[in-house]
Image (cartoon, rainbow, N blue to C red):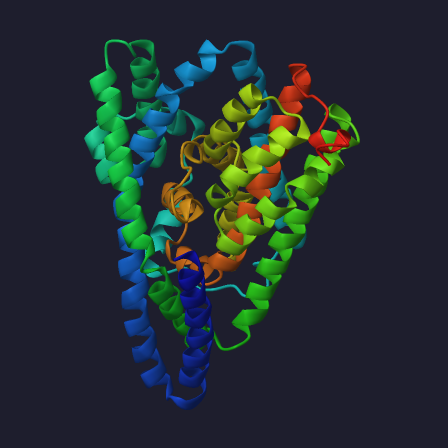
Length: 415
């Protein structure tokens, strides 16, 4: 299924570029505009479907994730050290994405006009600090969900999740209901994402038809800049592992080579989970630590995905020539820090998170259509990076706990 889906996406990208170029070259301006309008119908429907799932998906996955943190707290020291690493790695990944997109400026050079629907909203987004603090807290969760006020939904979800965890023995039915709703929303998300090849075709065809083949140079800068940023993140993860685990960390990176390649090929870090767990134990990480850190990491330590969220959001702002203030960028980091949690297993989770972030800051939602065109290529890299980040995290926590034994290859018989 993954191979077929990937093939469909590649074919959709090729067909989108070809059709868009043909429209740009051989149709009259009026005919091109008409074609772009019809392509836009497809991408608009896809974007509306993404917006449809944001509120219930964020609420259910976040409540379920926070409620289960009671399990992490119950293991005491291991849970605290694990979360310390996850939070530190998440902040670093977000800051690295922010720094690299400012350094490389991948969206500069093609300033697209801000869509009319967003033009007035961009100016209105400049709230005072007092208004922002007040706005964070919802007066009605139903109103917040109706308007996709993501930060208000997050605040409400945190309260509910903590409350459910605090009365876990008295509220198993509530937790079970939330988990069932989360499972349903994940299934709905899967159905929506099956339309991705069609949406990618329409997005590329529309963009190339409207702006010409030169838009591909911007995509090349975006893809190249992001993979360069991933390379920097890999080096920093390896360096952190070297400081905390020692030279053995390079042995670990070699041992998880196959899971990394599997995650890259399938654009799914979850597909690499069983093999990653096996290799961590062969490396010497105790089963207790590996079985605890790795599954938790798939919800709370998606380093590649988190870096992509800041990188892609600022790329969209650059494309439309919108300047985000330092305060807005700090707020964006805090927002992404929370909204990206509990999204494990969600197909194209980064698109959902970015869509919510764009809506919160009133950035043009059409920007999602721009990055959607090349998201599959980028998803492969960030999925592989998630495997690297979680492998290093498990080794570090095991080292801190004194539960990092010799790897099996140290034993001549095992070798």
